[in-house]
Image (cartoon, rainbow, N blue to C red; front, side):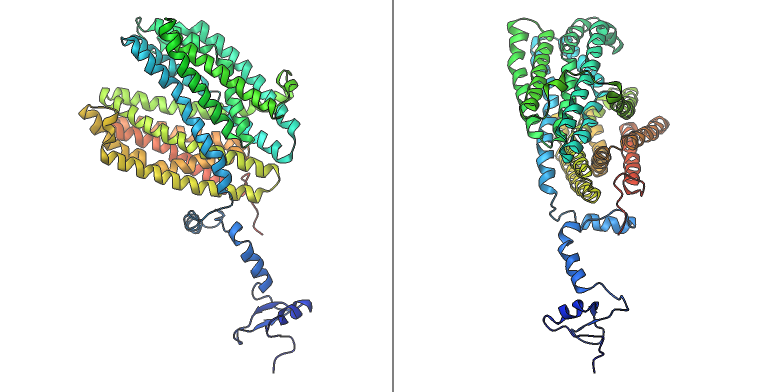
Length: 519
């Protein structure tokens, strides 16, 4: 005889039990019966199980808070499964990748046209000046990085006035810093060029290029801020379109100013400056047209209390950028001390590494925007889920880049960059080290984007600083082991590995900005 406190599951009988306050569980004696009990909690109820399954497609994500091995298994097992975040990630990252790829094209076009002037001096002048510009402007990339989470958070809250005010403040700061940089490059161009090791025959070409291109300094830094704003709005298509038009203008103006107007290297720089000025104006105009930026915010002088948070973030991220540049400079110095062959091979491998990092940076942009948007809505759980999904895509992308580099190295793609047998051999031996670190590099970029999106700039800078210290120590120590280029890449890979460990530790930490308490 059945116990009065139990009811067998036949059709809707279970509903009767629930209505009486009984708890439905699988019965260990009856098959396939169910029994109910008010007193003993054995397993989740059928209704709870159904609710859990209904959430499975959305919530089945590795939480990275359990044991490392279990988290890793779930992380890899769910990487190939589709996610609700995939469309948003692709919408942001793919156009961002195109816009990032357009940045080096300006210097490449200048190099191609200047090379037709004849002689090595004009080309050497453009090369030295391009390095100076790259280093100068890289120090201020915080203008865009820090603006993305602020704008995305304001967008999530529906606070258009706050977004416009923050963008206006950042543009004022960008113009101010750009004006100082303009004056510094104009006045100090000869001394800076000579400090870079330019010969007297190269100095006139380098100085002319440097001064002409520095005219656009305030607009270039404004573009940094504007790109960050568009990422916050999750609109990277506009930046891709403007970047394409900028390169087109430069391509048209270069031959006119260099050859027709006979301006030489200064003409190439002026063409680039004009195209960058037009690009910045185009981005600002589009923001005003779409009511994302009010004109009064563009010309309003910000108060100190409004600028202070920007400058604090700027100092923090400046430490990050300086640490990265110093490590690469030390690696270049180590390569130069090893001879011309090692230097040439290091330049080839560095370009491969830089290209991979640029490709992965588009995923970092998606992570920044999506996480800041979800946090702005107050949904930390979805922010963490989106971060994990970006990590999965980044890992697969890094593995793909690793495979492509190894296959390309096997097929001899190094011969495209050099015909020297020693350079090819040295590069071929070192490419596997560059390839092996790409999955870790991808994870590092995604983690950095997640923490930037949650405005944890301090952790990002600290990870870079500690990684740079470890990498620099390795680069100094390897000199006594005579490992050549392989030793240099062991040092640079140390930078990536240490950053990945520290950033992952912060991401998993219960004190981290994306920690979600267990239910």
